[in-house]
Each structure stands twice: as C-alpha cells, then as structure tokens.
Length: 446
Image (cartoon, rainbow, N blue to C red; front, side):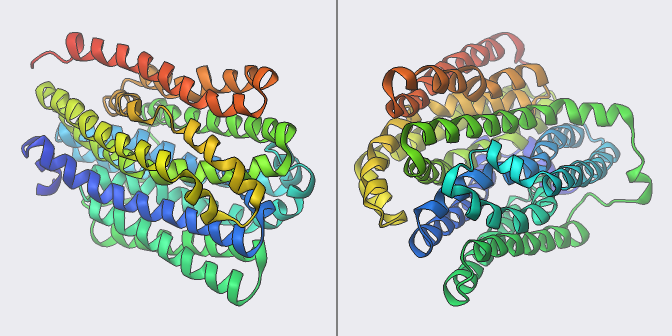
C-alpha cells in the first residue's frame, strides 16, 4: 500500500479534509462552471428554448452516467475500508468489478436510449417547442455517456486512493475542453444545439483519456486478468452501497420529470427555462459544500474500516462545521445577487424577471444543508447501506416530490419554489436525528 493512503489514519483530520476537499471542490467548480458557461452560451447564442432543452436532456444522460458515479461511490466505500484493513487484494478486485459493472450497465441504457429516444424525451418534459432542440442535443451526448460514467466512477476511486489532485485535474480537463469546443462549435462553426452536444461529448472523451492514463501509470491498484473474475459476494457488497447513489439519481430523474411537466403546465417554456438556470446555480453555488462532502468520505471510510471511531467522529464534526460556514456565505451571495445572476444567462426579459424570486426561495434553507449532506455521506462511507439509502432519498423522494405535486394546485408556480426549502428543512431534521444517535451510541471509543 502506498504511503499516501495510510496518511488517512495518522494525519490531522483538518489537514486531511483540506487536502481532500480543496481539490474535490476545485474539480467540481470547474465542472459546474463548465455547465454554467455551457448554459450561458446556449442561452445567449441560441435562445431560452435551448436552455429548456438542456433542462430536459441533462437529467436523462446524467441518470445513465450516474450508474458510474453510483458504482464508483459504493465500490469506493468497499475499497476504502479494504485499504483501512490492509486488504489490498480486495481493493484491487473491487476496482476491477467497478469497471465491468459501469460499462455493462451503461451500454444497456444507451441501447435503450437509441431505440426509444423520442418517448424518453417526452417523458422528461420535452413538450411543444422544446422537443426539436432536445432531440438534436440528445444523441451525441447519449453515445458518449459510457465514457462519462467511467470518468465519474474513476474519479471516486482516485480520491479513495488519497490522490485527490489527479481527480481534480480530470474534471478540469473535461471542463476546459468543453468551454473551448463550445466556442468553436456554437460560435465559430454556428452548429447550434448540435454543436453544444458535440462539445460535451468530446470533453467526455478527453476526461476518459486522462483517467485511463492515471490508472495505467499512477494508481496503486494494479489490475491483473484474474481481477476481472466476478465474485458474487463482492458484487453484492458493491451493489448494496451503489444502490444508495443510484436510487438518489433515480429519484432525481423522477423529480426532473415531475418538475418539467409541472413547470410547463404552470408557466410554459419560460418556467422550464427558469428552472434550467436555477438547477445550474444549485450545482455551481454548492460546489465547495459538495467538495467537503466528497473529501470527507474517504477519511471516514478508511478510519471506520480501521476501527478508529474517535477519528471518524472528529471527521464528521469538522466536515459539518466547515460546510456550514460555506453554506451561509453561499446563501448571502444568492440573496444579494439573484438578479445579476439571472441576467448572465439570457436576454429574455421574462426569464430575467422570473428567476430572482425563484432562486432566492430555492436557496432559502441552504445554511443548514451541511448536516444533511455529511450525514448521508457518513452512512455510505461506513457501509451502512439501509440508513444511507433512507437519508439519501429523504429530500427528493420523501419530501420534495410530494410537495411539488401538492403545493402548485394551491399556490401555482410559487408552490414549486417553496417546496425546495421545506424539503431541505425536513430532511435535515431527519438526518440530524440519525447522526446524533450514531455518534452517541454506535461510534464508541474503540
């Protein structure tokens, strides 16, 4: 085992969290800036209908590629705990299984997408004028999705090896290449929505090439042919934890379907475009909190596997503290700059007018979400699949989807926006109860 991964057992939690979270945050920053710029280019150079098309297509392709993220996070929990116990052979076998499962599952989804593209797009909200640009955007990205899935899976494995800098570089490669190719295909070659899709697909390819290079040249997980023999028990262990992330992404996709149809019914294409801006801002503004969450997981998983519960508890409290500070800053920024943020994306006066109020309400409970995110991440890192699944599904599945269905008949489109902070508050309370019990009863001194 490399010295790098064993540092997780000895270095101070604060320094480890910074070491893990800063590269993860920078990587997510580049990824989300890429999505923002993509949306800005599409909105300003093509039109607000194109933003609505992106809002329909991205949840579909992200759902498929999230198979890689799910297998990556679930398998990396197994991998981190195996490294913590000194079982390097199991860690290598886990990685091999992650590769096989990622490509196998994603290719099946891509085949289904090729045969039923129009039906899937309609299901996800491609109504009226949104359908033509959505179809144009969908196909190139769909074909490149298995590479994106491998990138998502590989990124979590790289962080589990305590090599977060390389995970960051992979995300930067994807983001920068997409921005450059956007300018080339949309502005210079005037290829419209299809050009935006091509730029995204090629950026996946370049990210895939970098991650493949890392595993060949830099990784401590040296694969052999014998590593690619399926072990049912290992598959079962990976799937049980991967299912947490997969279920979350599945619920997010169901939420996208309900939101897009509800928003279209309440406010037409313009309302869908407004949510397209808000969804990008949710990813962008929360990047440092997500970075802390991702940085926290290998620290918690490794030390839980090693039975060092004092360090696990310290990691939980430290991560929540710093993530909360960051969340408060994010809330203030959104509160003050909501209108200038909306004006960045489009020149459509109706979209600019409708976005600020919606944006402020969607972010209203952001100062408290650190407990929700870190709590769910802990149970996944510790291999407690049932609790992780329950908490992961709580916001979107148990609270947000029902509220989006219940509130609009009474409050119109405003009911959609206030559903977000209400669900954040309820899911944070639930996670807090689980986490408090875990820290006082389960994580006793070893």
